[in-house]
Image (cartoon, rainbow, N blue to C red; front, top):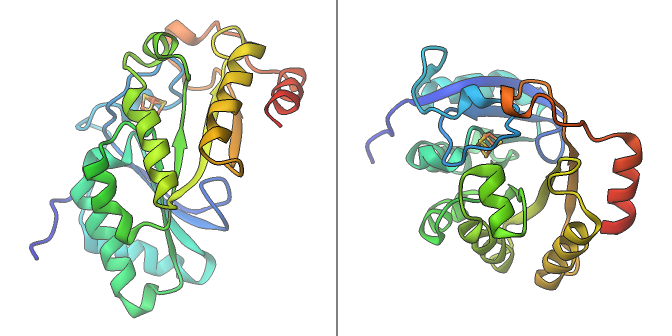
Length: 232
Ligand code: SF4
């Protein structure tokens, strides 16, 4: 099979404890199909940008090789990882087929805005997906991301049904998507799909966001305590 084109890469982290289970090598790809007001890395939204690094499959595998003694897996994040589908699928297929990488797990950090056909290509070589849900209400989702959440809700259901959904992540922004009713509805909907759904709450911080969201309030410890009480 011909090699996928080189990926447009925003950055690489050789060891991370916050991008999936265990200690992980993380590849942050350029390109996103949402446009979130609260995006902490808006420079990753365009696929091509002067700051991007072009990396081949072999170059990424070489970097993973160097991290091998210290990692339990590889996560591809973004931007939106599935925008560069061919590259991710081929990278994960290589990891799964080479004996030297056999112990590594493969995870995707996704905004969920991907079709079932895309997940079907990735599922055979992907151990788990961490999926962000910005709002359950479609109108609110459009306000926050510029897009409908229809595809994202379908992705949550589909990935759960094929046992590939590792967790759903909620970025909660005070006054924008964190009312008691929104949290209750979201928890209820997620648990109606799978009562054991892993839900991770991320607190909004202004670091890195664009001008429009720079004056939004950050989530406080009291906010976080309220989120946890309601969602559990
Ligand atoms: S999905 Fe993620 S990378 Fe894309 S715009 Fe939203 S926050 Fe940024």
